[in-house]
Image 1 (spheres, rainbow, N blue to C red):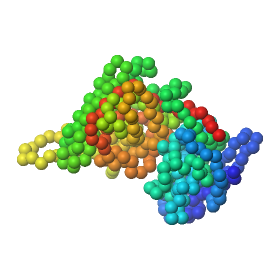
Image 2 (image 1 turned 135 degrees about the vertical axis):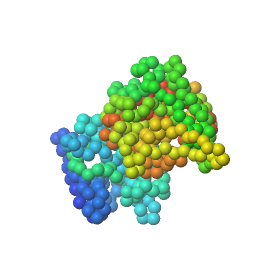
Image 3 (image 1 turned 90 degrees about the vertical axis):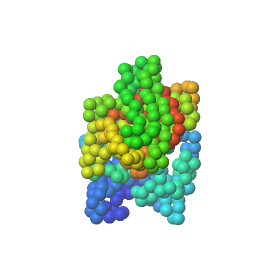
Image 4 (image 1 turned 135 degrees about the horizontal axis):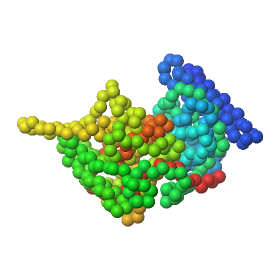
Length: 400
């Protein structure tokens, strides 16, 4: 298929990029610079698409696969690292509008396979997320266009991307942690490294009635409790297990990995949706509104004065990157993979659900300072047993 760039001058911007094939090295070279759009005063974008705009093609049926693998690298020193992969399909059209499924990934200076699961894709039109597109997994037999883009929103800067291949993939989650190069962030099974200190926090400090406990057993950590509605708002409260104060901790650099791998099991069918979150040293202390530290609390009407305790660890909460996941109750331990593109630091304070796509960048992933396992936006009993938290890559079995 013919590849062609489409940059923001189509909407009044001044960004530019070019593409050519290096037949000798069997590479596609995408070279360009994202600049500020003059009338918006915000960064623009560069896209690379096949076939070009207004053309379509019949791509292979990808039904039954789990995601895409981008084999590429970014070769310009201090160049952009946050990119997206894009899909257009026959079924993602609405009132003459063509939706585009996008998911972000990070490039390094070394050639690597970057796994992007279909669960990480969101549908957008002209840069805004839309709800009228069908689930991307129902569209894998109807792909009409593929492409790459610089991140939106993203920084300005230059880039030079060498693309080796774009493939569909399947993977076996039971093999995730056996992949060479995984990084242990926390472990309780005694096989990877001594566990990091964790503690349980309930919403009682904010006037709630939820309870939880986090206890380390022989080869796992036991996280259990009850999430209840807040008395005043009647909305679900929260519980969380968290590592120590972020200003006193530092975890390994995970910027060259694809995401988080959780080894766990659930023993309670009442609550199956959980959130994993992390903080980093760049954002936790200063990224709150107007540079302030925030902590929510509730006060039940009473004629008597009372005291509300706000732990210092709350200062990290509003700058954390969160990703939700589901666990089906089972007696067997399993592994859950959360790609970095599934995380966002823009989320609802009441439910924890994302309100905008804002994944971590490489600087965030170089300076992880706190880990969190949360129950929020739900009511009921829960019981998780956690063996480890890893950062790593997904072993890919490439298909046509």
